[in-house]
Length: 177
Image (tube, rainbow, N blue to C red; front, side, top):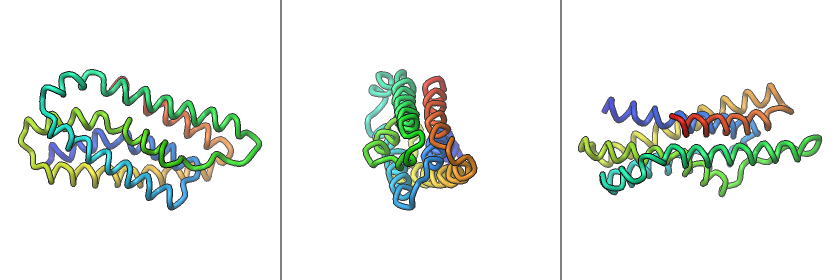
């Protein structure tokens, strides 16, 4: 159980970082719920896919999952920076739409796929793994959203830029980590 919780925390900190970025752009209650659900489903679902897929796929996907997830997050962060630049002296950047949240959740959960492969080799309960990953992911996402909201309230005009930079930074960490 300890190994499972530590694995969930290790991969869940990407959600925390991305959620800070999303929270800084002024996440509404509806956005918070969508982030929690989407990130939780991906973070719990990818290890499940990994557990079921087997070791053969792990070798093929394992080496590139960090790079692919990192590249997607960098692209999402860059897009947020472009939107913030375009919206200068205009209305604030709107909260992310569901499609972008789905892409972010997918990118953040690619490493969970590989974690699922390794958990399968340790004969960990499928239900237990899904529950632990979901609870940790949703918790870290909600904490990150709140932390980001507070930072955004203090920074106001620069929060959209900082949110984009945070997503790019998380992408870089995922890619090299």
